[in-house]
Each structure stands twice: as structure tokens, then as C-alpha cells.
Image 1 (tube, protein in one colour):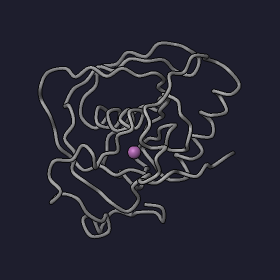
Image 2 (cartoon, rainbow, N blue to C red; image 1 turned 45 degrees about the horizontal axis):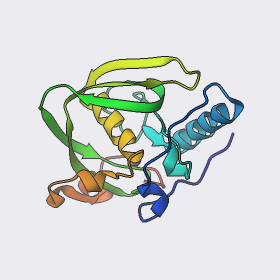
Image 3 (cartoon, protein in one colour; image 1 turned 90 degrees about the vertical axis):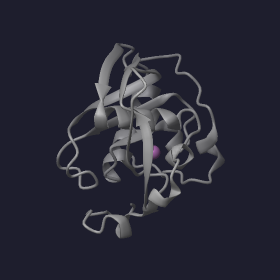
Length: 179
Ligand code: NI
């Protein structure tokens, strides 16, 4: 088990455009996925991108279940390893909802995202992934894949009146020490 340090906003490594993964099913890739899972679970996160632990690769993991204390009311998103992702919005519809980020601890902001998307890519074994999703699932994928383009959610916000400290905005959320 290896829980890695999560970089915080302001670190220039969070602003890079990540490199494509070129070799699948390798020991190094499996170790990276394992470390990212340990790190995400330790932080009670719903997703984590490789750049957040300083690894310059197009790899994200995400997934949530009803027991996640940071998102107690959110629907299930299947635990997924997504590499070299491509996101295609389906239609023009947007939805705004609150987001947080392990690299922006203690804060929440309202972020517009495409309501429905198709996303494609590969898992760590090189097997293809091709899903059409909406709602919270679509939001999580867009948030995580933004990390691969050097984008943090405040850079997507339009209304900074909807930005603040979690403990003030949502005092009922059982926030853990990190966020
Ligand atoms: Ni994030």
C-alpha cells in the first residue's frame, strides 16, 4: 500500500498537458494504478488523476459508492481506470453543480459541465472503454480528464459567487481532515 502526496493548486505540475501512455499491462503501470487507488481511497475521493501525484501521464481513476462520506447522496459510478481518454459532448446541454477537488482542499465551487458525454479510452490492460453517460458520472469524468489538460475546476467556473469553503457552504457534509 502506498499513499502518495497529492499536489495542491499552485504547483506547476498540475498545469501540464499530460503525456499519452504508450505501454499497457506493464509492471510500472499496474503499480501506478495501485498507488493511485490507495491514495484516492485514503482521501475519500471520487476520482484522482495521475498529474495530481506528480505523474505526467494521461491516466485517471474514478468511482464512487454510497458509503463515500464526501458524496453521501451521489449515485454509484463504476470504479474505472481510464487511460488516454477522449471525451465527446453529446448535444449542447450543460448542467451546473458543485464540485470539489483533492488538489483544492476545503473548497467547493459550482461548475458547468456537458450534461451528456461519450468517453473512450483504454484500461490498464489495454482493453477499450467506450461509454455514454450523463449526470454525476459525466461530471466526474470531465473533472478528472480536465486534470490531464492542466485544468482545475476553478478555471471552468463562471460564477465566483458560487465558490467557498465546504464547512460554510455545506456544514452537514462529514468532511474528513484533508477536505
Ligand atoms: Ni480534481
